[in-house]
Image (cartoon, rainbow over all chains, first blue to last red; front, side):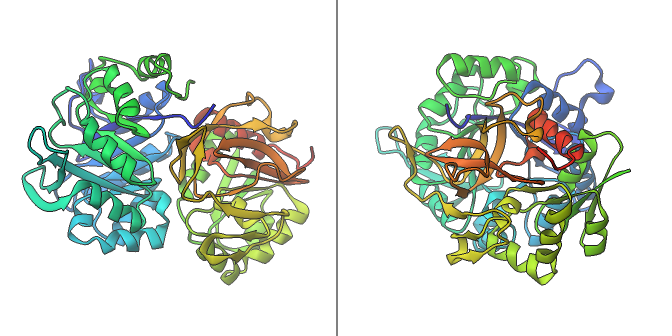
Length: 258
Length: 213
């Protein structure tokens, strides 16, 4: 027996409320990220990722408070991403109860920030988020490029090379999102996932495109992902986490059962 | 009042350790403390730790917590977590070699960059939920099924075949010590505060442990 492949539900949070793709009976309590995280924790999620999409500086205080509440009730690892740009941002989130922070755009504009963060807090809590799009033509060997600003701005950086560089700079984990697949429900970009996972020594979380349980299996088996992240299939109640784990286990994947 | 002091030497997230202790045990008061007298006055002591061992040991020594830990282990139940466990070994290979507290015999080693199991390449750090096999009975394993999964995140480890001190083992390319114990001291490589039911059960056992076997 061995290390379990992880299932990570992702919460997109704006001004302290979950905003994307949550369908509930009672709308008043619907978007409380702490309640949702607790439900996933009870179902056996292996970690929670909290993505802060709040734009304004003032609302970040709400985020810190939400992370504090979540960390006092959910006893599985918690990753917080979105708007992490300085060492102070990281310290604030870790003090609030996050176990890891995810650095995205700030790493692209200032790669040394990742080095500084890993030196200061340890690689175990530094996740680098990579948003990539396929740029190779059909039939060519796969090539993917890093994009910022929600996939609008190309950076010229090759995704596989970038993942290697970020690992060398001290990233302890890579959160890899395919911009092509995100929201499509057609499955992960398995070529991208496999290329990055094979290129780095640290764990890779596959993200973007999950529409059914076979996609999770493919992410692990074909994409060589160490963990799989999904939002809508769980939020909409299409599948529960125990269903996902039972399905993966049946396909021979090691998972943590409650 | 059952007071648990979590030693604060500026490394990492102590909030979740304190919250998990309060969740795990009734009437438990968890204090995050950097005051030696307050720590030594508590009923039980926790040495947590994240990050690199060199920085941890430097801060432990700079703040005088080396003496505090060595004093506490003489008289009360002590729990080390993750790098806190590694800091209680004699020596760590990390950062070019660091002398540690020597509460437990043995050294901390690097997994290496070429870790494999049955031909499969393994990622480092060892990150996620792995099975822990208890080595003999211990009060801290009470009500925890053998083989339960706990949450790990580390790149350095203590050999799981190191003898009497090993309280639990885990397999990740090598046999590693998931937990070590000696007299009134117990330490885990995994994070009980992040290991849901199994982890909270262990913390519950710790807050009622009298330090005997």
